[in-house]
Image (cartoon, rainbow, N blue to C red; front, side, top):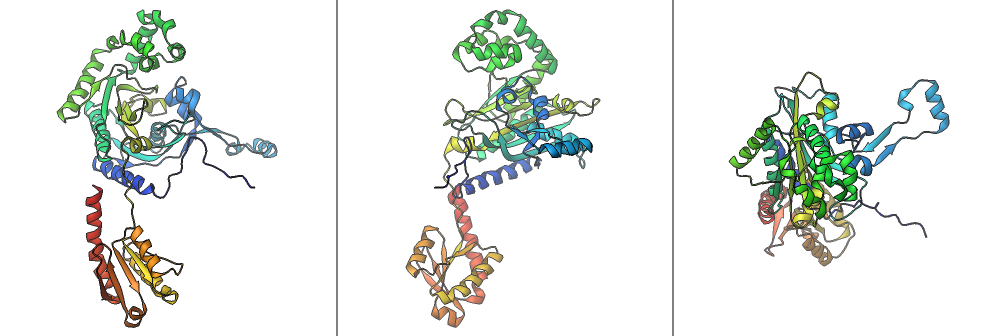
Length: 453
């Protein structure tokens, strides 16, 4: 018996019955993001590994434990030939599947000079696509997962109102996606200089005396990235951190900036909780960071997160003399779907055509193609089944109308139009069927939209 292959661990098939739900979610995301002035960008799913190490930080868990590497290997004979010809394109380069999209978007922003496109000084970009991490699969956390995210990048784009806009957009999307009562937590990490001072304060001050009381992971983090200790979920660590986290030495300027973000959120009615434990696990964050949680996801209850990352553009090669600002977020599609258990909006064809005899299938085939060209979703059966079986099939597809081609219809250039909801049937001249169905299908689609909402 030949081997039966199964989907790789930590991944899943998105099956036809579920795809309409994904399409609906993606369609809403595109519509809303564009209404905020964001334009879609699509970057490769893999990049040079160095890009992620530079942006996420050598000490981050993603870089140390979760990157999925892609390497191109060639036969030894070809490697020698390429080396002798100085053809650098033939050498092996180390790449990794993208664990998140911010670094890729910033790389593209710099490489393609997206600054100042048209009359814009601020590039407002959004993306939808798969990401990859080699972590232990669990509920809502896959090795291949999908995100919707935005990045707002530009010179001197350091307004607290932009932070508030990005957060408002994230909350708007989640509301439209049907996530019930998403909870927003925010915090400030201060400027890049503040982060350096806070790190020193934590490592050398009173907090350092509790190092040996921290969990094993946090003792390691203490040396590599002490900020990660602050958001440890273990009770013992949280108890220790709580004694210090509210007194982190933020500069007056950073405190004022954070107060302005809070004031802007309050002014547009967005509720939030200031969470001093929230630091996010990536090195590039500065100033505002935020996380949005939802019920139904267990202990890993975040559906989205983001923040400001002013220094990343410079770190990845942006012009030295320009003061770049940037802020963004990512929402996890699988986690959104898990959080509210959507009913799948089955997108059936509008019309089903039944040929009463095998010799009438040519007529049915021509008609179904004509209707499709006119934008009327249509289908038919190709197996010469009985009329009753085909009618039952149409009923299961939940179509509103069935067109029947029998002997009389073929002879008289007509078609029988059956209303599956009302149970009525009328005869219509074939030349008029398209115009009649366009009106009827328009009403059907309105009814379906109302039912879905």
